[in-house]
Image (cartoon, rainbow, N blue to C red; front, side, top):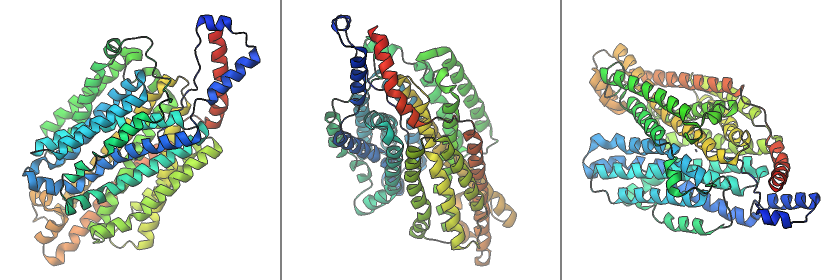
Length: 562
């Protein structure tokens, strides 16, 4: 979430024609002065970039809010349209499109200016919202969610790229954390907004609410018109030549692999047993597709979705895995702490929201402090190491929660875990923007980080759900052998309590408490792995990068002139 993914933009070097260079009588000192002026002119004035940052944030914030705003409306949608079997696909179609299209948008941002591409991606999102609002049946809602997911995949990464062009390097860690916190806050509020709109108006307003933002998108396309994206040089190629250079085969294989992986996580442990023939076939197909994707990308060279020289960069590879696992751990805390409060401590939905506030507040505060710390110290690797260490301690303590846990225990444990995750969360994005010199690598590096973050969230919740369902079934079959597997799978917490005698209801609670502890065992393992990965991230300073930028521009200008 939300955070957090900024790229180091190159300073511009104004190209002169050969005749201009011959006519120039500037001295070496004048050339250096001109280069410095050009470098400093890269970023707009403070009031301009603040306005532009606000515009980009509002648009990105709105599309990220859409991830959660529909969830509370799902029961009303199924009641209205009458297709309850499709309710799981409202979220799945959205995240499938989001994950599949990330790589495609990456190639578009590499060769076209970021601003119009961002504008176009937002219009795709708006189209999806319109289709969902007007949907006459469940299939229409699913199509609308898929279109929205495709648009969001290009909008969010584009927002981060644009912000990196307009915010000076010294402010970037802090602004990245601030950007992440704002979007994370809106994501958390999306479910509340969706519930209010559904209760007071109609579920269709969860889609209609996004359309007025189209005016802001137009405003975004007009403001800051002097800002350019230096890496989007087309090299004199026509649009047809550029499109022909896209890695269509790699994109198709990647999309199929992600779809198969999603189907495994969607159906495993629920509709199909993990050892069923259907899932075994999906295991094989998924493995073959990912292997084929790696082979195609290796042979594709620079036209690949993920060029080998980029993914082989040690810091980027470790940072990508770090953010994938950290986001998976974060999503498990976000989704399964409320289940603990409701299933084990017998909280209402409102009470569980209040009891998870320590997690949200700690995460928000320490993401900002982490950004400030990186800006001040310059090095991001120590924050990744410290964050993983603290998060590991917090998640290990959370795995001890039980029916008898006290308020100081569950409150302090979740704060400790949230603080650790927040401290380490900004590091991978700063690593991605620091280790590459070529500005045209920026969209690809950002997309890798963003894709891993999205996959991490999806994998974390899906794996957690599979663990929860399996553990509850195992425990209840041991404690209450009279219950059938179908009753356990379809009962839910309230239904299961109604199926047993009142004096046996505590056994259902114990089963859920045990299952949630096992989920947090997995969370602990994820964060422990991030600590290992952080040890291999290079110690590079964003301050040194900023100091070297002007001298690099001067050298480039002199080489071009000579």
